[in-house]
Image (tube, rainbow, N blue to C red):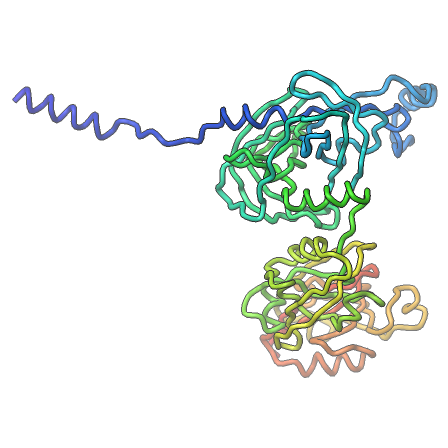
Length: 458
């Protein structure tokens, strides 16, 4: 009996013993990659450090200090990271690490230091190429960011808070991220949970083969430190920029010449899409590639050169990477029908942006959708910089308010029909069938956008 109890006990212990997981081993990867990672220190004159500071917001005791300080007080060092991409001394880093620097010192892994010069800078991608003197320097191999997938292991090497060659690891959280108010959304960031802190900027993000897949650039934080969200510039984008910076010192980007906004569920329904997708064109600029290619306000761009536009923020990424004078094929939705068109891409000299929308019950006052409108006077057209439409003088509780309309908006189109008078709009609104979504174009603060409105049943 005792033997049976002992045997049963051993079997039970065997079933609850912890299972060892096979975690990746980073030591060899780090040994191989670290020699090509550099620490970057910069100095700026005091006057440049405080350039743009609003003196009126500074306490008087400090105002006097700034006024009395010599123009070139002790320069303050700042730290960042970078990595060698060519053995003769070309280095890739973030633009914000070296922007405005008067002196750039690069510290190599063997403690040697070199003064660097800037070969080229690009603010839109936040990238810079530096050059130091040297031969047969260690370099990193470039991987491919296009093949990255969420859940993949990645490693970062850099100098957080000045602690050189610090290593952190994590996984890819998402790809193709557009950050709010970030440089016109020309970078489809890699999001990771790798611990990144001040000083990591410009350092490499590596896959398990030790190849660079990204450049650590930003964190989303409320504390100033890492909070689980870090963002890297894809290496495929970075190397395209680096090659142009090396060749000509500047970056040429594609330009379409439209303002766009996201397509939500209500807008998708109103335009006849089976799901929210694409980039809705709210304005076509005069004499732009889009105008010459026949694009119109109200078109929804569904694909660019065969690549689907799932989110509106996908479009600037693709257009920006297209070369000027190249011909792009776009699939669009127009008047409920899909069609293809070709556009010769221009060279970027302006930026694109985009807004939003909502949903509805019966209006408390005003017309059927809950607004009062008046015809535009010539003085209004000049002041508001519009050539057509009617002015919304009041918004009541109801469909229009739910959809996001505001007093002072200029309503220019409803369901694709241009509006020239208050009488015409009232006639169209009265004739709309109930319980459908319609798209309405407005101009607010001189910027056009579309709102989706659910028409109430009478």
